[in-house]
Length: 270
Image (tube, rainbow, N blue to C red; front, side):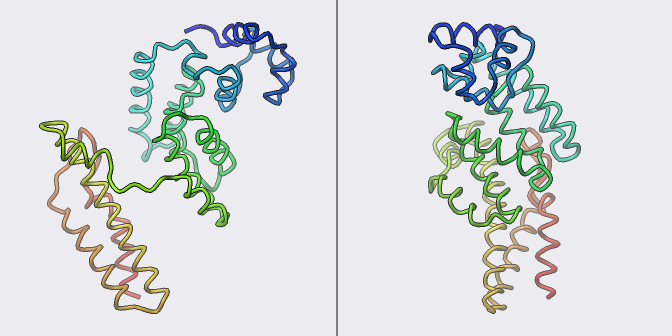
């Protein structure tokens, strides 16, 4: 991998742009640009997409990555970080930040990093990172996941007027890639897609039943609300006999909806 400073200097000279012009575009001092080009410092990771955009190259081109090798290494970093995402968030974050030292500005690593940040305590960082990904990534799955996380962060921090406009960026879809893969592929590919979609669909159904129930309760329709809560419990209990496919999951739907079960039981007891 070529040094980033050398690449920036080379691209800047190709465009016949001075350090001052480039610095003004980024909102930094020309001394900062000089330090990058001399290899004394590195740009902030959030600036990488803007630098690539200025020169009209991808972030991969900016770093002269072998794409397939990079993809393999990035996946390995994210897989390792995922092992600690729930049990040791700080360790997961460190693995990802170390990964960003190797692959600055990588969309996939930045997207995974969002899952380690507390929406309340680090709201400014979450919002800035989401906006960067939404504006710069060429990966739709990263873009729309960043929209979802940004909307959730706004909601958690009481910025309710920004939630709907953010969600409006996400297109409405009526099928998923996993559904199509389960239906149209064969063998192991079909099985893996079906297992993953099964769990996603179960989680979504339980979440929506709880949302509908709460709304009905707010409207004073207690019996209708309770019917939704009872259905949610039945769906969760139906997965008690399920098994773990530990190639893809850490627990069954029955196990990881334990907190939701407690919430629903409390709602029914009210």
